[in-house]
Amino acid sequence: MPWEKQFNREEVLDKAMQAFWSRGYEATSMQELVERTGINRGSLYATYGDKRALFLAALRMYDDRMRRKRLAALEASSPPREAVRRLLEAFAEVSGEKRGCFLTNTALELASHDAMARVIVARAQAEIERFFERMIRKGQAEGDIPARVRPKGTARGLLAALIGLAVLSRSRPDRELLAGIVEEAAGRLD
Image 1 (cartoon, one colour):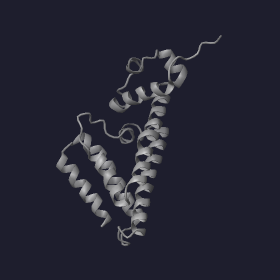
Image 2 (image 1 turned 180 degrees about the vertical axis):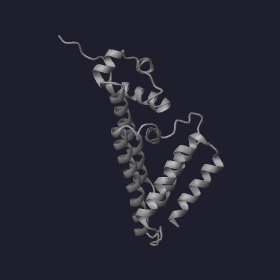
Image 3 (image 1 turned 90 degrees about the vertical axis):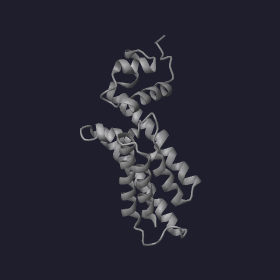
Image 4 (image 1 turned 180 degrees about the horizontal axis):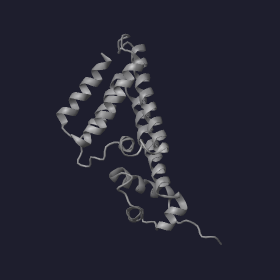
């Protein structure tokens, strides 16, 4: 009878995601992944391939679990203007953990020299931009956002503000600074 893996792949991937999210790709060693997941090195390699493949799987998991679900929840539960503000505020939160956005962290660390990481990050950023554009168009249709607001251009500006918030929340976690950026960005909808 062939040997069967005796672990939950999703739980292991979640633990790897947490490690990469906290420390980044380069700073996370295979030994740390072994320790964090509780799975031996051979099983990690046999299941996920190499460290890069495990990282990319973890990044996709983050994208599915965190970004896509957050945007869907905001779109389903909040009026357009509020959905935009709430997303900006979430990125401006200052916490003791300061892990930031895994996608933005990856953009800064790997996207310039890892084509697959760049594709994952670019796709996520494009979907965030489309979320902003949908919220603007919906807000305009409801009469809450003025017709003079350019949906595409404003969505791009909001994406840039969001990425800036993700970076600044880690490098300059000053609540007043971040709140000011949220106000300026949200003011683009007026």
